[in-house]
Length: 423
Image 1: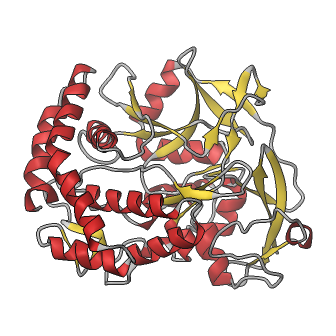
Image 2 (image 1 turned 90 degrees about the horizontal axis):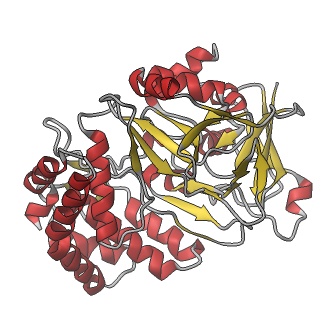
């Protein structure tokens, strides 16, 4: 019988909130502990799993907790490393759950967590990670007991910015950065993502300060500071390094109780409307967050990002779990610059999800369904479209000065292929 203990970090301390128990994935259910329910400061681990005494169904349990795991090739590789079926999310979670996205920790029964420590990486190790592709990424996340949602080759590492050193976070030691391999995805993906993020920042969208890691060859790594990790003045010290606090987060698929395999809106299902409903009901600043969310929807169309699915939007909780808000934007790339890639957006805007067909009327319709006055959305659309070319040109110039030699070419491809030319 599976017996997984679920805890959540608050102000730097892990507290058990419940258990997942069952003979397998078909009957495993999550239930909150009585002690957690009795606390005045108790919160649900997910908006889709509200505080209640009764156990949740195996389907609801699986939808949220499987959403903590990697997807696609990385998931299959991790399952192979663990000698598990790639549908057995419980076994993978028990092996990877000591360091998840957000503040949740998963432990098998009453077992003690592995020792936390930071081990400095050599230049050779960084080069190997950059060069060896998604298999090496899967090997690392398994060895480090690390669970990162998503389908690309990536892992969590600790970066000592003062000394420009990278460390492997072992056991329950939290990482500070998500590091992606460049060549396991698309050509020039590092420059592409950095250009898109810099453009988004120029247009006032909150994004992490990502950067490329030069491994002295062409296999670049792309590092993004984790917005769900934060250093405070009262931080602990481990192996001479300050230990960040974990901040709870959940992506919109988890919050809505939608399985990861349905993260793309294939048929009209009101994903934008549903996200705005969550923001309106639960955000600490709903008006700001709803407008920020629509800015990102507009930006995805302008930049040609057809991969802006439910799992690429998240809630981020305060360190004391008292409030939540829309997390910074992440995983933004222009997919339309790659020949043959879909021109279908991941979420409908009004009645359309085709970049070549979306019109102002679709934004008006989408705004109305989300409970927003059309004039507000059209003003945001016009402002962003008006400043887009200047913002991306400035971003390309900045990156070229930093050594991203193909930034200008990618900028031109975006302007030629994205939704910008249709608005």
